[in-house]
Length: 183
Image (cartoon, rainbow, N blue to C red; front, side):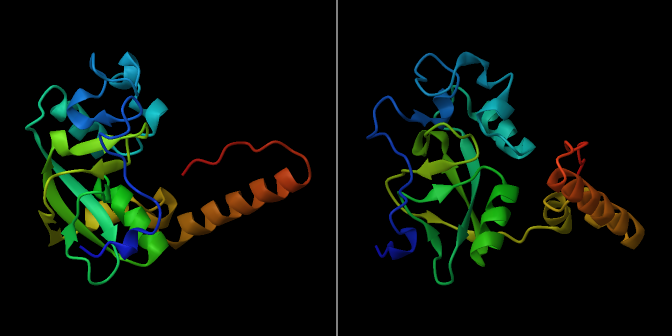
């Protein structure tokens, strides 16, 4: 298996005893990574997308739960290999793909094969074999969900949002505290 695309950043797995947790054990008695309030306050533990939270909750206590995973990959990568990083939401993968100028693939894994180091948006696939994938043909609603709201409201709203950002930035440069920009 050629895994040069990974560089030195390796995904978590079961070999790091006590520093990782399996997806189906998040928030449970065998979880040494997340405290018990992870289900009530997932945002405290890196959850940024509703789909991630929903998949974590659905897999709780069920090691055989089937979980949809997404991954940003360079051209030529057609599988999710054991040891690859994956996300539980398409938005996470889209953000990674945009930064890396790559594409998004998706696959289905079991909860027992997904491990985390403490950020709910980032998981390591540690199954016994590569997962077959399909290109993630994300529909417009998923793509739009990752854009700032101001970009979806038309030219006037975008202009107003840009003006607000510029004013806030200039104010901060002059020592005034930011008034809070809402995206």
